[in-house]
Length: 482
Image (cartoon, rainbow, N blue to C red; front, side, top):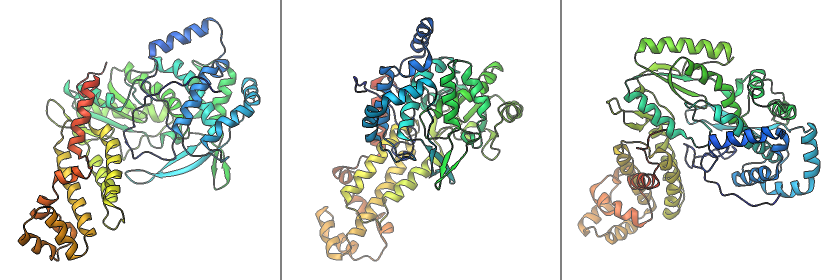
């Protein structure tokens, strides 16, 4: 199983460094073969009658899958096997495992149920497969993606090679600029838990004829969930957490995409988040009613009425962003995105948190690096300047809390070059840390230059650096979506 390793480039998801620790990343988006190249390879293999399961078990495909699973790491499944134990396990048991896969007798283990908090409240249910099942799913994913992805809609952006959320947001902006200034925002309620297995397998069978692969995919869907030591059968849904789940969700929703294309709608779909852009509220309400009938009738899913609406695009959020109401429809941060980053920074700068300032700054830098890697797409940086000032005030409050004694405050402030008369007054003040952090003397002494010397990279500085990097790489915000 130890073959040559291929380098992978995969951008962070929109959540930046606030990733789901228990989740398993799906197939990356950069450095993957194009849809045309993938389709050519599929046709070549079909011409020589290579069975799909044999293709899945090719050494090159398995080596790539093993490398991906090892890079993604992730938590153990119900059997407790860790990622670093997978390679030795395969070296010892591969012959037996391969034979079971070829004969169609392999039985996946149940997934381990994990609950993680959603940013807007509630819980998201993940199903963590065993490391061995993640390896097999990844090998399946790499082959199935070549067969299915070239046929997916151009308006589908989630979990696809060469596509990302930024492309969806840019396309949405182009629709608004073209005069489609109403959006039908459709949210599918508990989509991953409601997928109908029979309808999904019918979609898979369109391009997969190898019955061993079909049985294996069905077994993964029906492998069950381990909850408090008890296996619960899976009668519907495709658990989030495994490599195969995103592709299966795209296969299931491809029928929705094709129907929207057939009707001539301008839309963007990212996983279960779908926005359709129209020219009037009346048209939007008509589209909402017809799509609801399609989703709840033919697809056997449910529209989340509380989160779905016909509204102006600048009053809704899409993948963490929103838009300004002008003709240019500039991309801006959604209000909830600002609230979430402030909540995280508030947690990292709690004054009651016993932590050296250098370590605190290191953690903040790591978080903001991932966050800005996604949200630098916004074209209205003024909110970042406001956040910068707010963050510096919180850091000044933390430092003031650490300087508990009057003598310590006096010497530290004098060391910053403040006049003795001012220092004497400030050092003896009875004002609280948050209030004193906004005082002009403290703002002067603990200014941006001071925090930069301590290693802090501000939001505006990160924004400018990230945008410059995008322009240099030729993939900046101004790049059109082809």
